[in-house]
Length: 555
Ligand SMILES: [Cu+2]
Image (cartoon, rainbow, N blue to C red; front, top):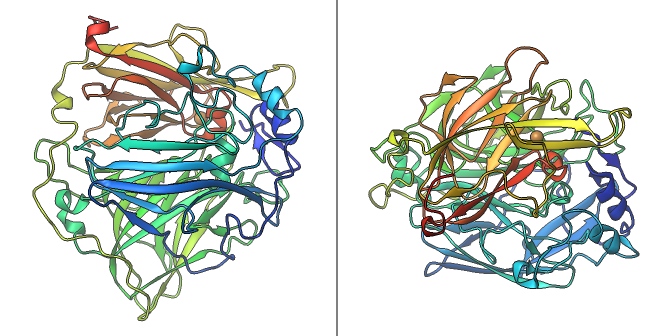
């Protein structure tokens, strides 16, 4: 259910209170040079690549905003040489230093006071518990390093208490572990209540942990294309249904808008083999990728999902690929796969998303093209994946499948109208431990689950609502054990997984996953639905992971 409201400045929010605060601040300075987007039908280009040197990436970002010609609010991260959303190439063990300055204008009028009055919008307790600013505004920002196994501490991957307000500068210094699986990750704002408009505005970029060729050598030396799908409001805000999507999508900032859905263009040398690294950086849109040449479905040789090389965690440290004809990508999910480009004879080669059945209360994510692929002898050669440079790295999740769980838990997604007698009232979204009372997210709510570093926990997550939800937890990847009670033997680790909608009768759809708290990280991990409208609407919670000496037993 998406009962957000269309606002004059183009934003849409699940929470009426947030909408009220935002509507009072519409009127950002407009500039055509900020957050530029490519014309419809453009040949895509890759973002700028930044590489670590001597184990460090040191970059300055400004967070900017503008309004596009359709009235939609755009956001972007821009580095000091003017590049938008550069791709950050990290080696395991590196440090990522981002000096982030918030150049989004301060909200005007009383919106700051309005937000400060809302639950969860101020950092309670002493100033020492805050990280940056104490009070959230409609211009607040922070950065989440999605999928990375980095610490949830201030100045690293902390999203609950980190607020960087208009005019403020904040130094990130994120330490990547030496056993981070090599693959595709990403960064995006994560301020609860306004994460959906920030991500739909386009403030997101890719993080690549280097070294996939040492795990899955089949990709060594292949040209690689980075493909980033984002979503945004449909201009004019037509009622979704049929071919009218709930959200438009874009590819590498080239819009693919309703109603014509003119695709972006990918140029390739004829029949070239390439590694496609696809990030669904949508806030809300579920994608089901398929590649078709003149109507014939093409094989996709999957080599990594959510940054973890496929087949790499079975004790051999060697990955292997498998072939799919379509790949479901939840918002935030990544898939890396090998494709063979069309020959010159192919008339109509297209990358598309198939229709996704999100449930009776879900968004409309219809079938539509994303890109047309043009075979062209003169197509520029994308950068190559490096050649194999060493043995596969140590497995991060070694032996997890053989561990005996220290706890079994059941959680569920649910949602209700905030005013059950008014179908147009905003929806309250919950993620709840079975047996407890559903509660909207607040950083000050006592946690429903506390655990201890070293634990291994099996969580069953049910969907008791009539739309899909996408479970995500920070700081770790989980092993997928079961879907709807049926064992999954892929041995795959993910950081985001879809739990399909409940039809209204019969058992609740579910997934069972194994959580690995054996790593060195402690602190407050958060878990939530990665449909960001749902997260902003309350579907998030904290699990404190305590060091063993503070809590001798498992909880
Ligand atoms: Cu959801």
